[in-house]
Length: 75
Picture 1 (tube, rainbow, N blue to C red):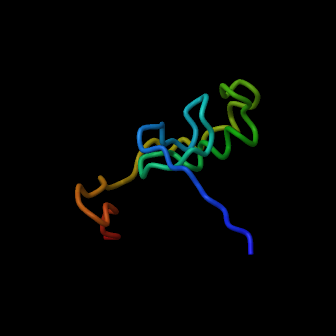
Picture 2 (cartoon, rainbow, N blue to C red):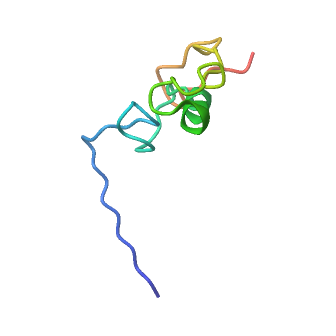
């Protein structure tokens, strides 16, 4: 039996990608598709393939709720 322990930092950055930190967690507001495209096509600063590095969707069509489950209703 293998036991693994994990340390969780409660005060570290939580971001899908912020230019420095990659995959340290994810916030609902993180633009996951643009980050994936950036990591695949864009290099570190969108300069490699700028037309392939962004889905050009800047926000959700509805705001997130302030209480759990935080996601907006579908309609």
